[in-house]
Length: 402
Image (cartoon, rainbow, N blue to C red; front, side, top):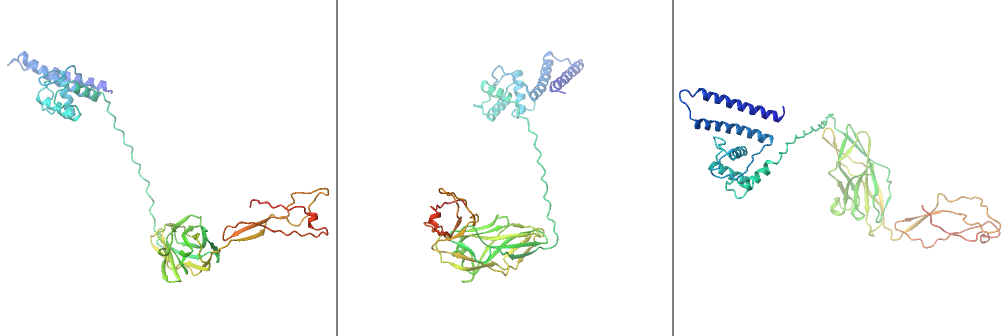
């Protein structure tokens, strides 16, 4: 059923009720005949009720009142009735008898309240051109339909962690690489000086703390340290290290660095790796060999991922040493290149010079500091009686890519 048919049916029911009421009035008049004025008043009241019903239906369907004059105290008519019905709908006209078609003090107060609520000034209760323009603007606005709320999706519950009733066990062991005697030179970054293997049994674990013990004052040689996992990812990092970053247990022989508040997941029954990586200072410091470190006893703490229990590892007994290189001069290490030609026969012309014969390739590695090569000396020997200068006319040196 569409809205037009619905309004027609309701309106027809109102007219039928009017006819029935009028019929009752006609039957009830024999004993006391009513005057024409009284009947007209009753009919007017019924028409007002019908008009009220029509206005209600009209407001639902988008119909509005039509005003051709200003309304004020003493005004009468259908336009006053329509205004009163509209104000009843807005809650400003609250007369118990409903719309009367007469603009009295109650209607004036209702209009003033409506004007104040809708920014019409002055709010004096006079329904003139300004108020009617405001009414028309409001009545022409198509109400925005209430959007259908989008249902909130029910989140997929996270499966609960099921306890297996067995606390994890862990083992920590020293890896062979980096080896003892690893060089830590001035200004070097991301130098691996020790590596450990961690194995968790029972279920997955979470590394919460990892501590390292040193027999020297590390902050004299490096100012940054980090733990690296087996894939090269940073687990934790400490920068701008100084004496306050370490715990001194025994002066001159026992200094400890603790990486805490970790959340490193460790899979059960596989090899997990942790590497200590440091950045050395760029300023000169005294060279020293045999700096020793070890994984600190009772400082590796692991949490069971299933049972929320903790286990503390006893640490390892194997130490690792590294050397701090603080040379004041750089050094060059020469070597024969891998692609350097070996002993061979070379075909040359007997009537001129054969150019571009490669005699050898060499590599040079700078140690401790950057190095500038200013001169190179080569010795060329010949087994011929004529001497090397007879066979070799010139030697050229070229720099090639590594």
